[in-house]
Image (cartoon, rainbow, N blue to C red; front, side):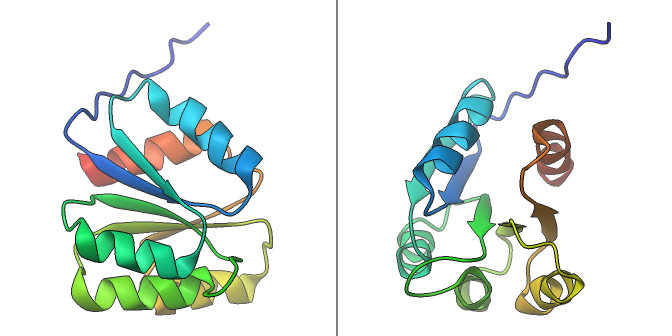
Length: 129
């Protein structure tokens, strides 16, 4: 059996933008052992406000279908004032147009739900390395 990689992101700040409580909880469980500081918000407006107030944010896990302001719009706004933050879009809708729109909105990466946590952590580690 292959050992799972150990991620040590003690200096990293991650924002999880997710309106589904169960999904947010599961992301928190998987990220807990990385040592990263994890913050949560449930909509696009709050995500933009959070990153504006916390420029030390390193990575945003952005759900696309959110109340009040969807994830692509929030990503465009965030990238307009903080283009160094990594944004990984996540959505349950795996349409090819979403992938294209994610790239156009400034997302650095795109994953479909249900998330493969090994793939997610590996992608995140690539951005942190």
